[in-house]
Amino acid sequence: MRLEDGSIALPAELSGGAEAQEGAGDTDAATATGDTEAVAAAADGGDTGAAAPAVEVAKVRITDGSLRITDRAVRPEAKPGLKTFKVSLDGVRMPERKIDKLEFRGVGLRGGEIVATGKLAGEATDVVITIDKYRLVPYDPYAVTFSGYGIRRGMLSVESKISLKGDDFDTNTNVIVHQLGLKNTSAGTEFEDQIGVPVNLALALLKDVEGNITLDLPVSGNSQQTNVSIGSIIGQQLKRILVNALTSPLKMFGALGGGDEVGDLSAAKITFAEGQQSLSKKGRKQTEKIAKLLRERPDLAIHLDVRNSIDDVRAMQTSVLLEELRGREDLSGDIAAIRDYLQARADGVEAQLPYHLEPMLDDMLSRRRPPKAAIEALATSRIDVVRNVMTSELQVRPEQILVEEDISDGMVDGPAVVEAELGVVEEDEEETAEEEEGSVG
Image (tube, rainbow, N blue to C red; front, top):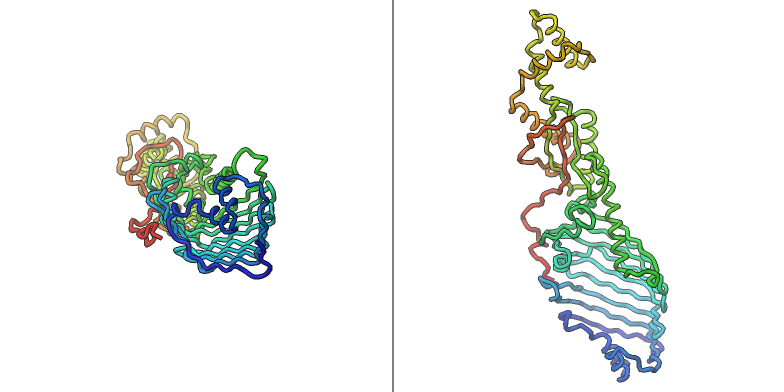
């Protein structure tokens, strides 16, 4: 069939279940040529041995199209589709498999646009695909079926350049996921097993201040020189990019707590001076680093717990003893020497207690053990200090700081610390409008 000049304009509306559409395309295309042998060959997957008919079409237009699919292979059934779409093909030549110019434009059922432009020249294909804020909730059933996580809300934007030349492929894709929210619908841990952190924590770490996740995904290679599928290559590359994207914030936070790898994250430790409510200089720097991380990632939160130190008890005993001895004129020489030593230390002056007086000081301190309530009050005040510094001075939102209901009464050997463990901001239980609508098309 050869059309010298002119176009085929096909107003179309495609609708119905996915099952009803399956396998229809090949037979219909063959029937359009009027060649019954080609129909049989298409059905049998065979070859008639005859040369394929030459087809040249100047222009093909499909306008005012719509697409609605009901996919019952997933539960609940999915109803994705396009509210409108149009297709434009210029310079179509078969069997050379050439299209001088192709363009596809579609609008999602809930908004968002998909645009694909490019050309096909035999074994060489160049296509640019652009997706602008395409809503993801209609695809919630697929996410639930294949990942165990439902889509609460979110939009997808993509800019992808695809080049195929023979067996060589080269793609460069920029992906932005806007305001993605998930709901856990199963006990699956596949993401955590693969990446090293729970999926909700990973999302909170990946999102920027505007709630966007941005990933660049370059993939290239030769389909004949690899034993794995292109899909597997893309999956491996995506995993590498995710791990690298998570490494920077986790290293900063993990280094504070002693962790080195993405999956080895431990709680960050904010240090305090012994017996004091105030942050140490090191503790202040640690607090500022954590606050910066929270400001840059608004879905991220920290859970605070406290570990008082054995040195805290001694510092409190020392404070009680010094208060008893301060200002007294009737002290013996040894006790006066102990008082002067304790006073100098309290004033920040370096002092040395005579060696023979150390047992006497230890005995005096042991008889002045602070009450448990005073130790608990010190622990509570330290958490309050961290929370107040972060919210009042360092512009962290209060909902990003969570405090454990049962504060630990354990003691550590070394500096007292407030431990900060990474988590996510607790979302409002009230469902959003998108959640209520679910996946209805």
